[in-house]
Length: 335
Image (cartoon, rainbow, N blue to C red):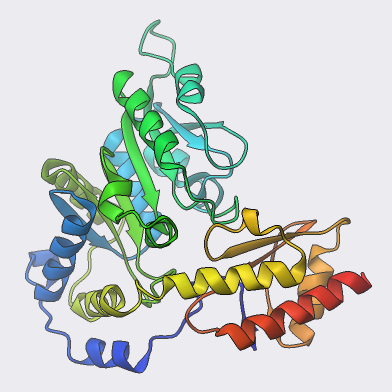
């Protein structure tokens, strides 16, 4: 099978498995796991933050960060189809008691959009708009990378309005690889940042949330409250550290493979910023394309009745991508 459903389907490499086996561990709930500590310190440094906290999942990283910013009833401003709204089981409402307002139409939005959506604490019956959450890259928009200037304007507008700014940087590594900017530059001025290690970087488990030390301490409380305390988590942290060492630089290969897949399947290259390819169909045939491709050894996903998503990653090389693209193109043409 050529599996392009997501970049989360990767298997640990032999080198990563060796790092896991040799990990130095301790009890992380007691703050005694050296491998976790090293990973947290390294990611905080990479993002330009005072501290970082290791958590099991990207969903938990987003949710505890946003919970630490809001009080129940507050409003979080997000882009259209943001991950924290579409793919996190309604946790913002259920666990944080927060409301959301979607702005923009392609996953990104402008400072003017933020100002238009903002509402203060007065009059008393009005819910306060507390946080702006940015997703970079944006998953459902097709791995779209935010323009640096627009990103800075949005964060500046949030600060001027007295709001916090959260960066859902699950695939921030891809954004850095695509733009040549560092993760620190892309995360600048955000109050909190989440990054995922199990997507493009290929670790089996793990994300981190970063920010000011006092903020991360608050997140630590919510990690425990949400059930995210871990014991000898160094076996997981070691895989993440290995991924940072060995898999960041090669993300450009995934991006090149995504462009090759797009070209073969008729997707405009300008729409492919990173490693996600959204293939739009003229009719409601996405489920049929997915089923037919599976029968021919290619796994892709339907994200809408007329849209198929394919994601390149370290477990599929250029030859595999080309073969998958040929299968998808042939099936789509027949339908």
